[in-house]
Length: 255
Image (cartoon, rainbow, N blue to C red; front, top):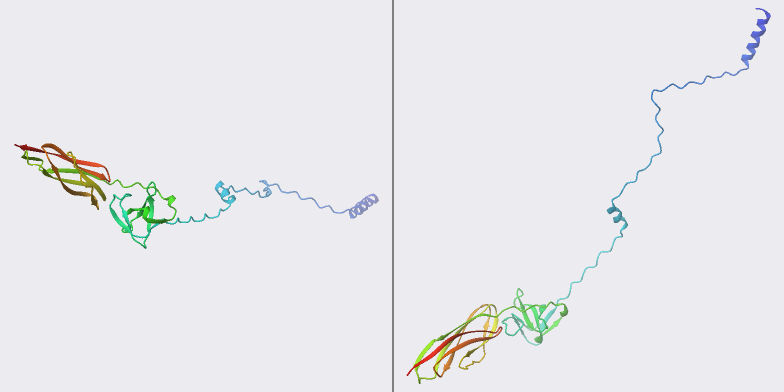
C-alpha cells in the first residue's frame, strides 16, 4: 500500500471514532385489522318514569279525615203517666203498645205538624207505632226527623141485612120493630166509629169497634117503624174513613 492509501484510511478511522451510533427506527408492522377504537366516555341514558309515579311523588300526603260523630238519638218519655202507642197518628187507630213511666222510646219520625211521634214500639221493638206529642217529652234534634205518612188503614167493606126483609102485619098493628145486622171489615188495626141511619129519620147513638188486626166484626140494632112503607137502613162508618153500607126492607098490611 502506498502512502496515499494509508493517509485515507487513517482519516476514515478518526472520523468513525467521533460519530455517535444512530439506532435505526423500527418500522411498525402492518395490521390486517384496524386497532380497536378508544372507549368513549360513558353517557347515562335517563330512565323515564310514568306520570302516576311523578304525581305520587309530587303530591303531598293529606291527613286522614276525622271520623264523623254518630248523631244522638231522639228519645221520647211520658210526662207523668203511661201513654198509649197507636197504629196510626190518630185516636181512631188501635192501641198496639204503651210507653210507661221510667221508659223511653226511640223517635224515628213525625207527622206533618209534629203532633204525633213515630217511634219504635216500646212493647215490641220489632214494630213501630205512634205517640201523641201532647203526652210525652222529646229530647234530641226533632227538626232532622223525617215526615212519615200515616198507615192507610180503614174500613174496606160493609154488609147489612134486615130481619125480616118484608113484614106483613095488620094495618093497625103498629109500631113494628125490625132487627138489623151489619158486618164491618177493616184492613188493619184501628178503632171504627159508626152509627145506624134509617129513612124514617132514625139515627142511633155513635158506637165504636176495636180492631186489633185486620178482620171483620159484627154489629146489630133495632129500627122501629110506625107505618106501611118501603124503608132503607145504613150502617154509617164515621172514622177512620167515611163509608156506608145499607139494605132495604118494607112493611105491608092486611086490613
